Length: 263
Image (cartoon, rainbow, N blue to C red):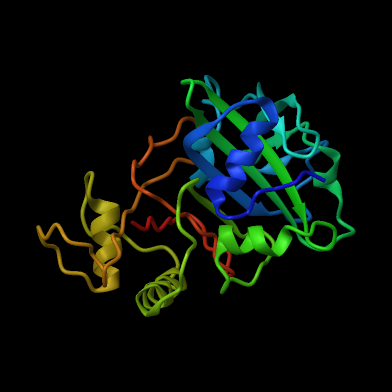
């Protein structure tokens, strides 16, 4: 097992980069509690729509045809660079990562957390890293999960986060708990018709559901939390990056289709 540095998420990522003599200066990390449906060897780890921007661009010319793109990533277990496959399956449609370390398939040691990092190095290069944590096997499991998901989160299959590698640990204060409770209430309503059309339709509709009145105030939208909404596409390209510090949690109720970006 690697000797991970766990003072912070940044130090953990920095430790991975040193496996190949690189030094990280910025980047994003995606971590997911793997499900029984995540088979890294044959079918691959299912990639949530909200995290497509982390991975290499897939140029899907024909949505009715499968597509595979290979890219290099440092294996956090073996400490060596290897070729991973980023696959688009037209049948569902969905995207998956395959050709991962065999430890991703170990279902005998409780929860498995797959970690993918897109890092910018001080020399100007960009690189990918892939690591795996197993609940009953890795001494680092609880500490790193606390850095990724926060101490208050109960791990469940499918839970995932996407955040900057220098992001602070997520803290569940009264404001965030209030926002999440309202979010859950909105989600239970099912499909909601947009209240207007155009670029602002998603944000305006969601904020109205939260009880936020439209305004030109530059301060955070909800009790000190900046709320950003983004329309995502099921196939083809994606809607482009949102350049805020962002965390995209998949909460215990397995919410989908809506992301909350916190600044």
